[in-house]
Image 1 (tube, rainbow, N blue to C red):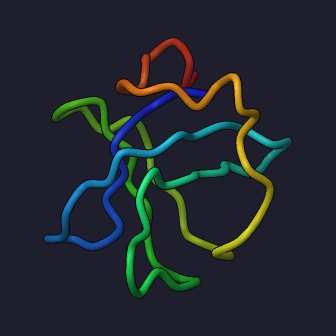
Image 2: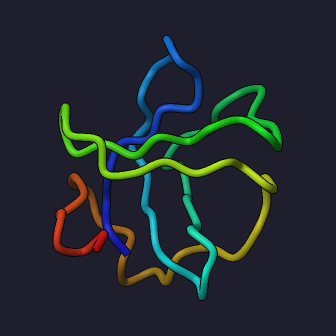
Length: 81
């Protein structure tokens, strides 16, 4: 798990989040609620201005990140590889 920023709309705000791999699925947990998140939207992960990756949202609920990994900060590129 790594802290990062995630943008859910092309011209929308970037939200602080925690992202982690769960098998072949990328899980993203926002640190604050976002309105209107829906299946089919893109989620783009950033480290500052650097795009780390993107994914298509397939659901809006799921397991939470392990508590010990929910720390403030940005994604560390090595953690997202």
